[in-house]
Image (cartoon, rainbow, N blue to C red; front, side, top):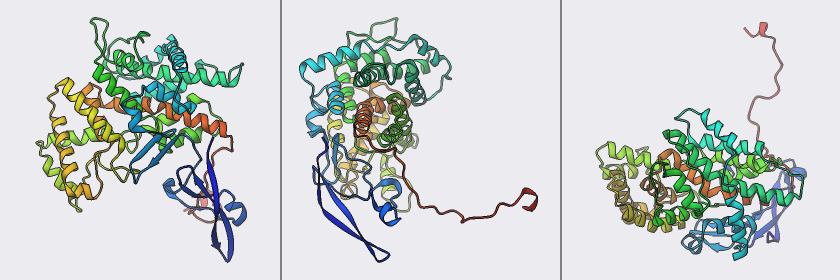
Length: 433
């Protein structure tokens, strides 16, 4: 249950009239001014472009303190979860509020396993996409189309229907993602293997071919599990807010998540790790002189910015990045890769961690910096980076959609401050000159 307390009121003086705004305090001491009745009482609204200071909901799921570098899922610190918990445990935790018992996780795994296959007719959809189609576009379309194959509001108990569709979505998303990749490189689809774990199965579908045996590396599987856990939820970001916004219209789970996928696709959101690789390529193509680009980043007159450093929310070290750094080192050691881009990345990392310019501005390497390096080392093409982000964020989207649905409430409908022309008289086309 959402835990909040009311702590007095704030006074707003507007046009010589005074209004009381209840002060709401969350379980971690976050303070908000409840303005839900402001327009009805005063005729005024608040203006907060980009919603940087607006709380759109009350939620039990994820807590972030950007100043202190804290991230917790349902109260559990991300440090405790990332290296120890299985991704499916995190799915259950986010969606249902508690870590699963042995019996619960066993049943959950079985329920997911029987839903990994796609309906055979869905395979025909992949034939309609051009070879260079971006996998995020395919992913969004295929997830949306799931609602045409399955009952979204079944004839039995509603909660059972919701659980079934949650299982379908978590189970089928890796299959859709792997099939979209295989389509892009002209290889045959590899069907799910029910004897493999969630991460091992995805890696097998991605990289195996029918003509030879593929061995899943435990180090890579562990790294992928950590990446998925670290991306599982991040409070009310753009894509999560989109899922809740669409879901508030009572859109079904598949449609709401498809909307979240398209929001995540944007380069300012899920595409950030792709931008890191593009920056590294630029430095490589310019002779690999990373010191030149560090100098450009420090120059106020230069428009160049180092991608993958600093964070919108975290004004301290991104706690996810600290965990990923260790995993990144393990993956690179396991694979023994000699890659100029990775060498440049390691040099930039060293500069950012030691240079006073970056330290004083808290421009530490963030989760996008390390995730891009790991994905590239594991063999994922750049276009798949955001798809992997979507796979990780899926349980968070589902949890937020489920919470929004259970909280009830009205359809989301933000207001605006109109800045266009005042009333004008229509002029027939013959009189417009």
